Amino acid sequence: MYAKMEAAVSMTRRAVQRTTEFGRYLVLLRQFQNINKVISGLSQDERRKIALVALTEMTQANAAAAKPGAVDGTNWEEEINAASERAKSPHVAVQAGAVRRWLVAAYRITKTSPYGEVQSLHRAVLRSLRLMQGPNANNKSSDIHWVESI
Image (cartoon, rainbow, N blue to C red):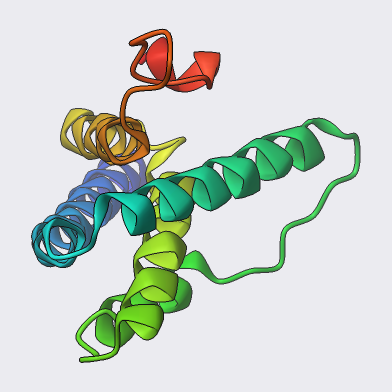
């Protein structure tokens, strides 16, 4: 009897967790669509600057995470929600900072998710960064190799 109850509790816990993660995905997807609208309103130079700074931050975060004992105390969900709200500002400088912060936070949140739809969103964030960076002199879409491999 106890084993059956334990199995039911475990199954319920997994179902609630999956439902919660899917709800977060839907929020991120809606925010991503709004961020893309803001990106389309920015100049190509501004987009390139945002992409380069965001990619630098992501590279530094990956290097820091690889170190033993590294602890990241940032609440990325709060960061992503705040950046999403700031992106609604009428000021281009505030929008640019918000877009950069949102992309970095979205990268961090979606990077290790085991769920396919979240991984798809992760690839979409990286694709946006690659497109924002634009072509360089060699007509390659990006100088950052780890982004091209996605």
